[in-house]
Image 1 (cartoon, one colour):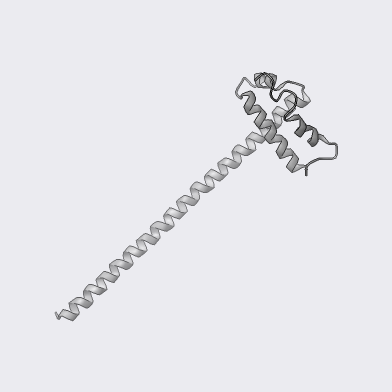
Image 2 (cartoon, rainbow, N blue to C red):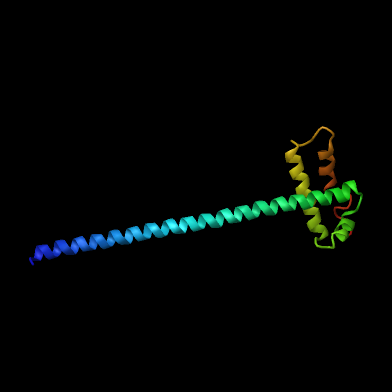
Length: 128
């Protein structure tokens, strides 16, 4: 085999190996991107689920305090103290803000304004 033929074959083999490695890197990068996307979607879904359940808990706490007339510390006691007064205050505020957004800041009977004002009112900081 001539020296030139050996060099050409070596170049061809080197290019083939480089192409093979490039394709493997691209495939790996696609897999990494897909997996990272799955992680981000799952975390986003988790965050959305947590936000929704916190809004529901806050709405129930608002009803306990506003409709049923319990202080926030009494509402916490009725919940088996699974939530602190501080957390209950945050949840009520979250529900109030969510309600205000849903109602366009106030519905026809003015309950949103009352609920927003009530989030920091009676019972919000009592018995801490």
